[in-house]
Length: 276
Length: 313
Image (cartoon, rainbow over all chains, first blue to last red; front, side):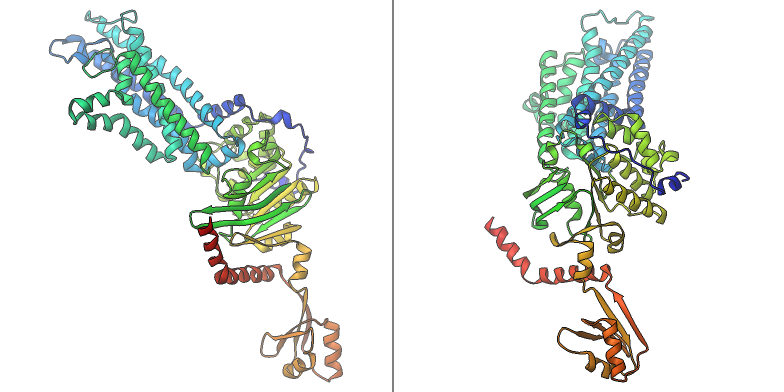
């Protein structure tokens, strides 16, 4: 490093100006910082791209497969939300993105720098949630819209396409995007609570995929309880097919939002209470 | 200025920091010296509010760290373990840190130049050598042009060139009137950098003195003398206030007499001297002695009193 020579001689620092008020930590500044953090990690963009591509490609594959032969298909493959089944992949990716955005700070030690810069801590949790919510929301709204419109265009050629103006069209398309946002937020809360990438991912995946399956083994009562878990509650408003043991779309949304709020509150309390 | 009063941190049954009180003054370099595991890093984490004290308080410029409105401007810190996301470039790391306090890109580029990371600023911090990581940490500490700098083992992993650079930089920052607080487990480094010493061992402050005073306390100067008649010389020199120790077959070490006195007396008694020299006590020796004492002391009675405190609490 050639510049070492220059610095060894002790290049002068500007005299300390003590305009403390100019450098106060404010919430918009914390938000900017979290946006810089998000955009400067390659993994953030890779996961968003993978989720978006997954949604679109899976939608086109489903459309291509069902376009010609509709008879004999399961109802879930013929309803309006049928081509958006790529959300299964996207929910995993966005959940992991949420976990990683937080747990990456713990695994690398970055969290100590972060909390030294924002000693009140909780603003960081909110800022991360907002950045995650907005980025995932915009990216997934575009992705589900493109997936829906392109796949329905394929289906329309065989005369079975749906349109956004159909009764559940807007709810399903943007509901899917909203579901992915809420899963990402849930993931970030898990990241704060568990503080490790493998632990955060496995507990989130366990809650989303494994617990509903396990509960369904316990008969009617199990299935009733399972309705209130995050992923079934999300499917209640993101999927157009009405199955028994499904909450109404509105109730489903309320239940999932409550899950996110509860997880975030737990995360905030622990963040404030524990040593960083 | 950093002030700790009765600062204590316990993790379960282990007391990492044991009711310490100290003041770190502005305008000088204060060294925080102690063996690994003595409680240096824990103390520094409590200063930054990262760890909550079990008891006691620590303030920066009179306020608890989490009450500071502009923390990066009040305290610039370099923490021992790397506190940087490995997937982010050095520049993006600094930009993210700077953003929390409304510090702009110009200052970020300024500190990149200051620490000599210009050529690698766009590279992932995870690919940095230990020395480059330290430079990045120092850049981060300087971002807010802070009144207080707190650096945990700053020369760790730096090449000799970098060590001289850090030393010069810290001196300059202290001369500007800032508070400079740095930790090290190396006495030799402190001897060159620090004006004042806080020696910590097993979570307790063992010394809070200026480097000059520390040296004086260490026994000042000793006289090293070599003579083929060392037995006779020993008898001749021994007396109240004088200690003579044998350090070799014909070598003695004398405390309490000047080299002039030793030479004059030997000449008067007709004793032959091969060597007569003043030896300055090294801080390293003094430091070893203090921390060894602490270990022995702690090994004796202190642990049982700790147990009593815990069961009382």
